[in-house]
Length: 112
Image (cartoon, rainbow, N blue to C red):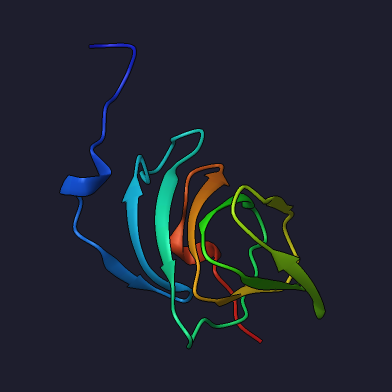
């Protein structure tokens, strides 16, 4: 077994998520982290996680993040660490990289 994995995000089919559409690599149980390319939709929903920390890297566009009710302006190359319990959503015409730690777990998404 190799000590590395390779994923080609262009070859991964996009799926719907609370933020818009996402392509997820390494999102499997037991992974230390995963990586997602996310196209933010106008209907992005406020949500939070109890276990996951998420690191966002804004790649394209401008807008803001709602973080526990605070509007934080973002632009390309802005990074944000979203800790467990922080209610959040992205707003604007944005494309982001999301790195969940540990790896993304759909059962760790909560909505008020």
